[in-house]
Length: 119
Image 1 (cartoon, rainbow, N blue to C red):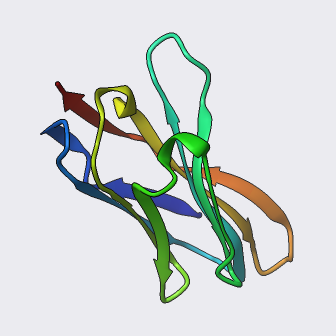
Image 2: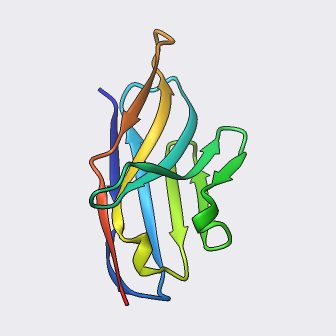
C-alpha cells in the first residue's frame, strides 16, 4: 500500500520561511513526478510546484522566486517556502504519480498539512 506522509506545516509570520516534506512509502516501482498543491478555504485546489524524475521543475506564477521544490533519493520531496505571504495560507497536499510492480500508474495524495501565514 502506497502512502504519502507530509510534515512541516505550521503558523508563521509574513516574510518567514517553512519547509514541507513528503515521504513516499510502499510497493513502488517508480515515481515519475512529485508535486505540491494547495487549497485555501472557498477556493479550488491549485498546483504550487512540481518536479519530474529528471529534475524538471514547474511553479505557479504566484510562488516563482519564493518557493523551491526538490527531491532526494527519489522518494522524498521538499518544498522550501521563503518570503511567505498571508495569501499563501492554505492546506498543502503532496501528490505523486507512481507506478507499482505491475506497472500500473496512479496518482496518490497525502493527507495535507496546514500552512498559516499571519500578517
